[in-house]
Image (cartoon, rainbow over all chains, first blue to last red; front, side, top):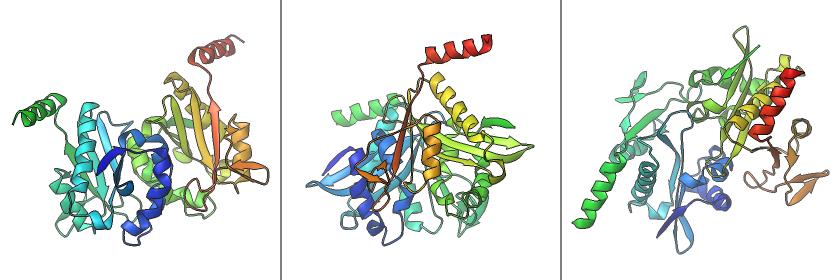
Length: 172
Length: 172
């Protein structure tokens, strides 16, 4: 299993598998080519035997200083429950720390309980919204009328703390 | 008429008018909230008497050094043919020059002849593709299967040239 930086040329294969990986939902239009052209340096591909099995699309905010945003994360159905997502998130967090980022945000739909639990496990907190659905705080009409969203935020370690931890891990 | 920087809070009103400004086409989903949250510093709103009459969504590429990308430009139907688009593009170009950007790119659909002519008038060149449709060079399947796109590129003045020109304009 190899994690590498996304390339512009990965677009076709990612687009081809997206709706399938999301169980038939029409997801591909949410990921136009521009992310592959302009945000590849902060995005990742995971391959096994040259076969695409995971990807993460993220970027650094141009408005919010030191903040990164994760737009899309996908894992091939047959490779789930193998910590592949965790590996990609961790890789993204570590690169972000090295680049001076201190906060990572992302969003999901309130119906997507699996995603909400997953993000909590990855160390994200829920950002307080203006509505509650089944005990979850939600931002009403966040992505358009009727498109409520759950907002996540994670504070990253400072570069120095992160490097100290890495050093300690090596020594142990 | 006032041009100002986009704000996160502009999202609702922009989203509300989009499909209408595009003659009923479902455009709004192509502009998720993230552009308003993370790329507002390079995006613009035009208002007249506090009413939204135009917007431009752009950002600086994180992969391609010194390159900017314009994702969306909209002008209210009753305010077309009044150079409003030109004002927004020029504003974006000038800010980009000040920020050290030397190239601006954007895309459009091959069927959108008005957009193709407009971009040429704004100083964009067509980037050679792998296909030709009615004399226009096109990039096949650029944004997914069947989604051919026309690619535009404009070289900006260098900061010094730009400032010299501005100085000369003032003097004349």
